[in-house]
Amino acid sequence: MRYRVSHRTVYSYDEPVTDSFGLAYLTPRELPWQQVASHEVTVDPEASDLAHELDYHGNLATYFQVTERHTTLLVDALSEVTVSTPIHSDAALGGAWERARPLLDPTLPGAWLAADFALASASAEQTAEAKEYAAESLTRGRPIGEAATELMTRIHRDFAYDKTATTVTSTI
Image (tube, rainbow, N blue to C red; front, side, top):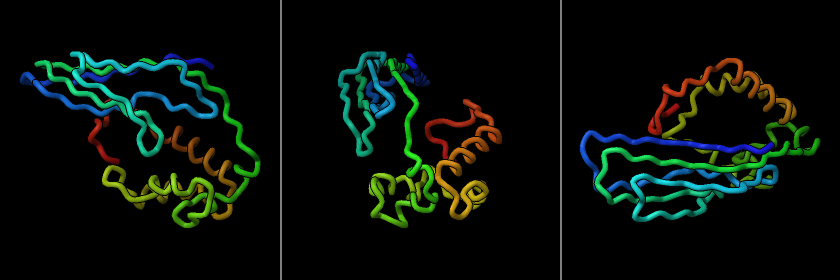
């Protein structure tokens, strides 16, 4: 399946701005099941400095600085991506979900990469309510593929996406 993915962020200022710095994560990742044919990030007014760099997790970050006087800043991204269905082994999906906890077993393949996502964060509080919600799907010994599929199905069923409910500074 081939997709054309576009994204636009608009910043409006009450007073003219003469120096804007930005960091954007708008480029899809190359993955075994996802190939990026093209990607472009543009800034208007034009950035006086624009650079791309891979972050610690392998995501392409776009850094920019706009020094032209402006009251509106537009950041646009356009990507062409081909996606195929990922293939996961029965062994990987059939193991108990507890075995995929990087903080409890740092010897697991890729555990050092996943550990950052399990640590506490000021932007994503680990609440008792969220743990209780997940616990319904993550029962002891349940295969990870089955547990993850049920959890995602429940989230899709139980929550409605509201694009106006959050901003880039919102927390959970």
